[in-house]
Image (tube, rainbow, N blue to C red; front, side, top):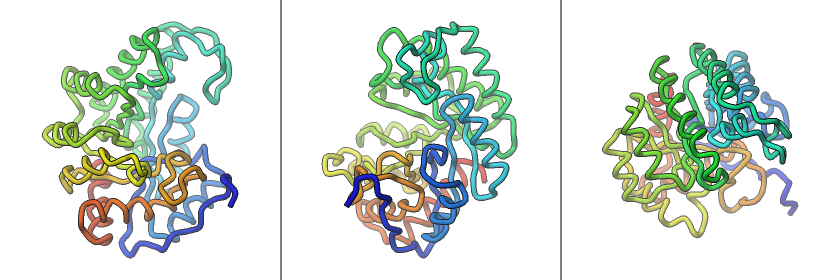
Length: 288
């Protein structure tokens, strides 16, 4: 079996569910094809997430054209340092870039602010901190960008979608310091059970991706088991984090049932109950 071959469609869910975080612009095939495959297994709604100015415009345009798509717009935490300090290695899809300084970051944030005002844009994100890919020289730009996104989300009454990689304490600190929006989602939740209790106390949604099925992911499963039912979401983060048994092959929204069934098993509930709760939670989180 080729590692590049798309996994087969899983058995459809009986209850509709939503993919709270996907990147259709990074997946093979057309948007229409991706949405049709998802609908075939009862994944009826997706949140398309932008990671830079261009991708955020695309997310907004795609949501405007497709009722089952909702947009989230932002500069990814790793994008802010690239804007400020340049990206001579061309590590993002935009290729090599010269340093733009704080003025360029402010200009990009202004575009995100304008997009966040649109009705079909339901969230601001993914934003946050990434201590894995960005070193100390980029932390200031990351934090400034994160704080700006928090204010944008609050100004427009939109959900905030958090990217938190190896930065749990700092993300929680900044959210507490700046004042989190009313609806805050930890995308691809990566903390442990103790952090899940902190998030629950603050009312933060926790969205679990395919990595909850990985063999070495017991801390994630422990977190899922203690997270309040009303704060749990499911996502693909496609084309990344494909669930077992298809790990390493391309991910897409139609694989949500694989992850959701694994989540239901962890929580000791049937898949219909899990799907219904997740759909309701996603609708509340993203106000659709």
